[in-house]
Image (cartoon, rainbow, N blue to C red; front, side, top):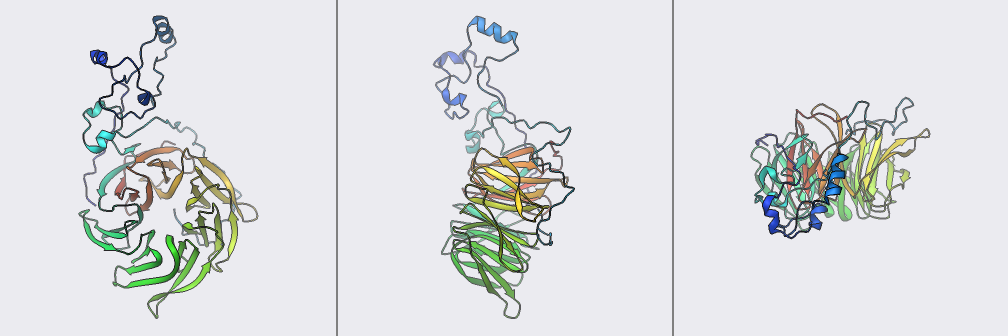
Length: 431
């Protein structure tokens, strides 16, 4: 999608001097300003600290301290028989590479008035006037139209159309050149998930999966699911769907030009909300707080992982590892032990629930992890160090991240917005 790709630079300044205008305000410091969340304009209270007694000021100056109390701030192509332990592997998860700079964490907040287009402070505003930090990527365009949560994004092979699905019971078709909506397909139920595989698009609905072939125009309905279809994945020439009642598998039948049901994979005691295929295994994350490992040949359960304490929202295969995230505020990295079973080799702690993971490579072909959280941000980490590269802010929490071609990726949030991003070629790693 061709848009102006100019880099956005944000400036975040400390509290400016109030001059004589401060006499018009009550001589009391704003509690919400101290907490970093005052959105009143004008605010009747001070947005700066009151000067201390003369002796206290001299003491602070002598020690070089400020008197302010407020802080300023991958691939699933491995076809081997399961994940295997590499005896020569040096576990560097969560460790910044030698010589790498420390990650600077600052208090950051998007300016509410800037979002509405009416901030009068311009570059002097103390809040962010940008949807990103870190100079890693550029927002190309925002696709508006969905009224509810975006639950799926698909870009079929060889197509110039982007497809997005939502709980507003629709799939929208976007023209990749103009960024305009080229069509809307309405359904009787909510769209719970989407998947593109070659020319096929699969749409997870309630009690149904729709299958479209964008090249031949074939339109199929796959019956069998019970309740909402939350996740879809392809592996070993099968289509697998995570539903309220477990996992269903279909296989394409070329003679009938249809998908034949193969088997129902049972064992989870709650909705299956995430699926990924890697190393000839299927990994399923569930609202029962567990991950199950399935053999893709026999479709039998091999192992149950129970280290998470809340819903497993997303699972991802990267290199010889399985990554999982949960509403328990953790991202866990799993590796095979000597017996071939998976165990946690590293746990990355977040300060809020994690909704989705997406692995990709930056403009320098370095592996990065995009981690969507329920505080309306996406954190971008280098792998395996988990050094923070930057943040993406959104109006509401991002539920879907999808990789596109040529450094593009797409995000869909709970407000219905779909955004198109591109990695900046000038970006550099912090580690």
